Length: 633
Image (cartoon, rainbow, N blue to C red; front, side):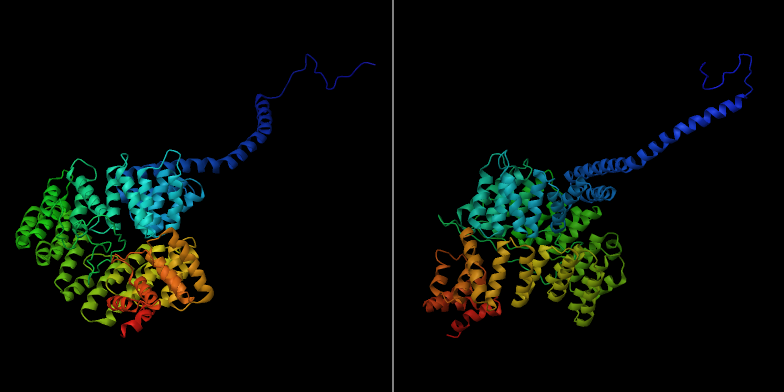
């Protein structure tokens, strides 16, 4: 049987009558039919690939902006660097390089508390470089998070390449914050002896020694001499900063060296002025008003002034500081130096004029400031405007201060305007109006930084209730704001509110449980408030550990001694203060505990003498109660 074809075969003479247009349409239909799956696959690929590709592009752009921020940081162009870092973060919030840029800007501009949050994010992602760890440590030290700083320092000193001088210096600064003066000086001297140390590391190490030793000790004199050597070498990168330090810190100049033993002093109370000068960030803008020491120093005021004036990098600020030193050296010629300053800088640019106005206010020539800087000129810039107000305040022309601020000739931040008005109204005796201004300042603040600035200014002007409220508000915005917590404790202690201070100290311990100093303070305050038995035993154990780690820590010794007193172990309490030398810089409360321990152990006469000396010191009510029986004799 013949096989039939599957499809009919056209005869050879059969003609195809299909038009070309129809053939073309058929081909297009077949092409479209077969292209549909490919197009669908392409669309699906684009759909799933677009976000990663877009994210990669944004990530690249974010990293590029972060690198630009790092370059600006190296040039100390802080505002521009901050803007680039913010742009990098906005472009891709999850990019670690943008976190690093923000953290570094914040660290280098003194915003330690905020910087810590960004460093911790990087740490959680294990993205910290060696430079990051150093900035992280410095921020933790500035913010008072000593346990965090210690963790980072441990990482730094464990590097395979060896410990760098800057890392040793950070360890010394941590020891100083932990009241371990012996260890702080040891670390600092290692930095000074290290040939790898850079000029600024040498300067910082020498300053650390000065802060931890008494003026009549050999290490103090040697550190001061090292700073003078830096200052004299005008080609040294740190020479200008060394000169400024010598000019502003003459009160730290070494006294006559007494010989072998080194006394340590880690706490120098800051002097508060009755009215804080008004500047943009509520800080002093020029110079230091510390009294000039009469100690025998190698580099005198005139030599420092000459070096400042001749330094190749000196700016008007340094020239004015040199004139200030000359006026300190010969007060009778102050008017002449003022005239020289006005002649040299009175017609300069606004930035220089602001520095001159601050200098004139600082040397008590506020009237000259107002002559140089009338209000119509002052309203051109915030720094000029505030120096004009400072001059009015120095002359106690409070009605004019109120009027100028009230007219809003210059658009100040509402927080600044209201807190300055509060000070003026206080000086005018308008108590209710002043309270209202403080409240308006609190209401106007909307960031942690503004609350902290308001709190600091209120504290300087003795408005402690406002300061505490502002610190509390800052904590609500940044819950782990350690400086704000520490300030609340300080305010409560200054006001004699022991229970309130202990409550805040307990909160600090909950947030930073590894901080031995915080635990010690909490335990000490609990003991003052009458804690016994279990709480006293716990405080004793903690204090014993801390004393073993930091033998020269008076606060830890006081906690140990008081705990043992509460437990009825008076001889053991006396042992807590054995082999501990008083240098005159100890906390008065710790000395009060020591007096009470001496009295309990039969050293009545010496205890009474010490108690009468302490009677004039600021003590908490509970501390004063410890020595009250001795004051009656």
